[in-house]
Image 1 (cartoon, one colour):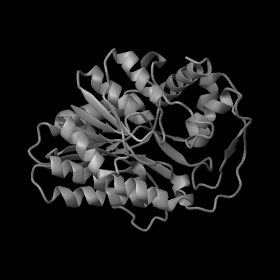
Image 2 (cartoon, one colour; image 1 turned 90 degrees about the vertical axis):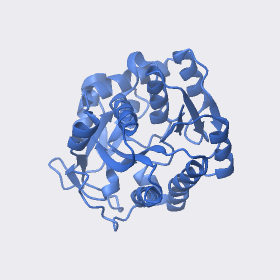
Image 3 (cartoon, helix red, strand yellow; image 1 turned 90 degrees about the horizontal axis):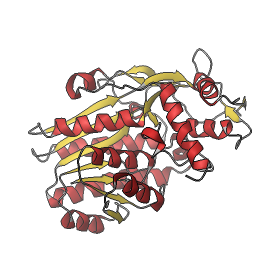
Image 4 (cartoon, one colour; image 1 turned 180 degrees about the horizontal axis):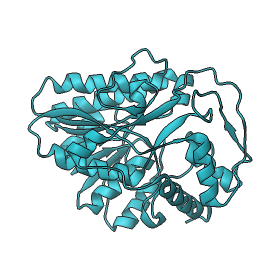
Length: 335
C-alpha cells in the first residue's frame, strides 16, 4: 500500500489515481487546507474502489503514527505542503512551519514504524538559481531571499541527513516543473480557486471571461521581459513517480535527486498559447513593480531521469493547456 500525503490536492489526487490505475493500493492523508472531499468522491467514482482516507495534519506525529500502525504501508509519496513563491514572501512563518515541520514529522513516523521508502516532491526552484538548464549538479544558492525556496532546501537537507543514519532508506527527491493539465477525458483535474496562485488557472479564468485581465510583470532579464518557466503535464509527473517507485524497489539503499522537467516557455508566450487553444483573448495590463526577488528563468535538463529512471516527458504545453481547459469547462458546467 502506498501512502500519499496531500492526496486530495491537485497533484496528489492525480498521483493516487495513477497508482490505482497501475494496480497499487493507496491510502490518502490530507488536512483539507487546499483540498475538499469532492475529490475523494471523484477518485472513488472513477476507480470504482473504496479509497482509504484519513483527515489529519501530518505535523501531528502521534496521529500519523496511528495511520502507519493501522495500514500496511510499503512506501510514501510526499505531496503535501505549501507551494507558492509569492505567498511565502508574505507568510514566511506559515511556509517554514508547514513545509519543514511536515517533513520532520513524516520522517519521524516512518522511522518509528520501519517504513523506509520515500518519494519527496520538491521543486526546480530549490536551486535558488536563474537558469534554463539546471542540472542535479547545480549547487543550491542558500542565500536566495525567499521562504518557500529556503523551506524546500531545508527539507532536502533534513532528508539527506536522515538517510545517512540508516542504510535501509530508499529515498528519491523529485524536483518538479510547474505542474498543470488534467487526467484523460477530463475525469480529474485542478479545481481552480477564485484567486488562483498559478498562471495557467489565472489564464483559464481570463479565457472564460471570469477575469477581465491578467497583470503581466515585464521586469525580467529575458527576451520578452517576462519570466521563463518549465511546464510539465501532471500525467508526465505521475509517470515519473511510477518509474521512480519501480526503481526504488530495486535499490538496496539510496538517497538521490532527479529533475523532472518539461518544456520551457515565457509567460507571455504561454498566454498566447492559452489564447490560441481557448480561442479567447487573454487581456493583459502592466503589473506594478514587484519588489521581491524573482527568478528570471527556471528550467532544467532531465538527462539523469531519462538515463536512470527511463523517464522523459511525452506531452506538450499545448496538450497541457487543452486538457486543463477541457476540465475547467466541465467544472463551469457543474460536472
